[in-house]
Image (cartoon, rainbow over all chains, first blue to last red; front, side, top):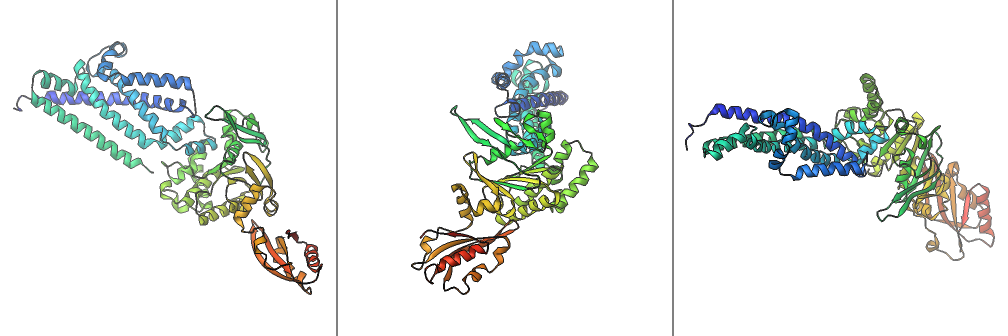
Amino acid sequence: MTWENINWDEIWQATQDTLTMMVFSMIFTVILGLALGVLLYLTSSRQLLYMPALYSVLSFVVNILRSVPFIILMIAVMPFTEAIVNTTIGVKGAIPPLVIGAAPFFARLVETALREVDKGVIEAAQAMGASKWDIVRRVLLRESRPGLLAAITVTAVTLVSYTAMMGTIGAGGLGDLAIRYGYMRFQTDIMIVTVVILIVLVQLLQVLGDRLVRRISRR
Amino acid sequence: MQDVTKTYRSAGGGEVDAIRDITLDVRKGEIYGIIGHSGAGKSTLIRCMNLLERPTRGTVKVGEVLLTDLGERGLQRERRKIGMIFQHFNLLSSVTVRDNIAFPLKLAGQKKPAIARRVDELLTLVGLQAHGDKFPSQLSGGQKQRVGIARALAADPEVLLCDEATSALDPQTTNSILSLLMDINEKLGLTIVLITHEMGVIRSICDRVAVMDAGTIVEFGNVLDVFLKPSHPVTRQFVDEMSDLSDGAPLRTRDNSRLIRLHFVGEETYQPVLFEALKGSPVQCAILQGTVSRMKHTPYGQLLVELSGGGPGEADAVIESLRASGLDVEVLPE
């Protein structure tokens, strides 16, 4: 195995593309997933906005999106991707499928994190005259911060593997590089380099996430 | 509270009344205790007072406001005038003591400097000046409850609801929390309603008491009246937990003796009434059992006394003389 054939500029470009896809899809995933997760939590049984019909619909949609393997989902949503960003390839075309794939996953994690919040504290806030919005903002999202941060970390790691899959349908990035050179051209060296970069990326995300969680945990 | 009933649908589809037709009148400025075993409905009752549980039937009025008629907004506004503390404190674990106490003030939309001043006052009131920047997990149970009290008082409520506020604390801490509650009741003129399963709590700080059993109030009145003359079996049970006064029969030591139970309340507790009544009489007495203690500020005592000796009628004369001196004398059956 030789290392001369590696085009480091190309690898650097691919790494940047992967990071760009991650950052933007993460931002939208957190916004959409948080809203969806809070709504799932609030409308579930014995909660503040108990609405069984709405909960069932939301839950059903989330389950459907989560049960379709991402490699199929990203292709299935292509018309939708085309409609909102006018392309299905490149970094731009990658973001809608990534968000559609990750947001329902993140929403479930948010719902679980919110369930961990002590019911007594919510009751105390109600007794103090807090509105539902006050409770979401000042109690639920505050008290569940460590759980939410852990959920963001897990979702970010999942997004790393999703971006790699997106490489097969023209999104670019490290996954694309690994498939084109490593798989199609049997260039094991490039395969190894991209895999190492991905491993480092995931490790960094996890360590950073764990550290932040530890810092804000007060239990 | 007027004819309040709360019905829950049970898992099997049937309906269970957690509390049934409860009418309760708490006067301004008093400490009202509600005692009952677990499952008696105390928790539901206190939660109906600020409508954390909406009664199925009946009305709840605090001051001049009919809470059961209010919408969500109005209820939120009224709840700010009703403080509440909890068995498990229910503090926000993610923010400091100061921010916990500031919570109701932030809800009310107060300005930062005003909040900081008020929080300082409250920290001093509950004796936690040194702990403002700690997190709840760094505090002991008693300190957490003090934070709970400070938070409940932050918005200057007129009423304080205490949901088993001392049940998770050790006896010594319980006493310090109870004296803090009594203190704020006297200093701020705050009306306090508390629920508990501990007789000691009722005895040490309550003015009036209601005894609950199976979702209804079985007995209520001044603490002294209810506990010195319990009429319902559940009340008697609670009283017996406190004292070990039994029916006395197994304690009888002499033949032809009479057993009497004396009740003292207030100043007479300290008078030598027994001595006075026996002076010059051939009747002898033996104290078989007794308690002398206090209920809130009132001293009281109960003695189980055996009278023996003397001719026929002379024991009766002693009993008469005890009654004449204002004592409550109960003659136990032979």
